[in-house]
Image (cartoon, rainbow, N blue to C red; front, side, top):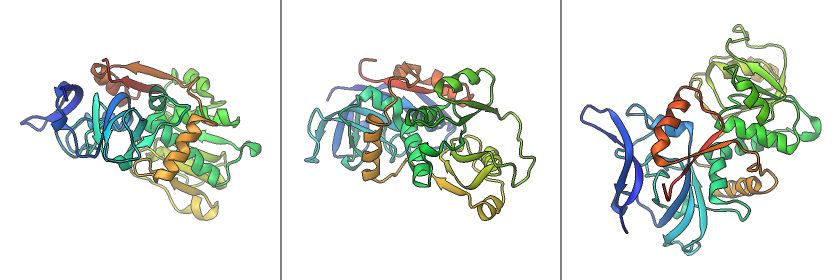
Length: 332
């Protein structure tokens, strides 16, 4: 196989992290029985973290980051996969411990591979990516815990202009939910949040709970993509037997709250793990994203090339990134 383009993260003698587009050979790739021609990837908050200080989400250097990819099978030892099959991968060890999707060619274990649903292209799959899959997992978890369109409950989406939050908001609107509050931190995010489908806006520049473990009940269900102090604040405002599906930690990893929302209001805190989701659930949710939950016609996204990754990563780091950014790999 000829050398191909990849975005490579390395560390130098001073343990500083560097990253750039390089030409590499197949020997650079991680182990696996399946080789894929990558057409598209996407950049997520986790990918941005991988480009920062050594010791973050990337475990081995040098590394090709990219926790998502979509493309076609080049070859596979798995009889269920044939050359030319359209496929996608999100999560697992991709881009952290195993070379990932920011590359024209990827080699992976076949058990990570999801066959692309018929109604979804590689580009559209990456318009969702890990962010969209996480949003779908969150909504599915909330519906399993009682969220129903016919009830028109009050729903809160935190980080609603980011990757997971924007997709979640748009799916909720697609499904017919009408009472959606979006959290924002900057005034310019208001119009984007409304465009995504939010009907109310909560500017969270200040913590409104004043440290109280219980406040006025405002929300029945929450898609929480932020974590940290905001989660503690949100929990104090969840109605009886409501649920919070939490998937992010951009606001911090500590949760400074009490047991009172859980034992006095019966609130459920649902952890969303998009990395190692069972394959049967993966396939079920990707089929929903391709069909009854399909929002690709309205999904806000930007398309970039491999060499544009640093600019997008900087926006993610500074909290200025809106919606989804996909990376066109082959041909860049």
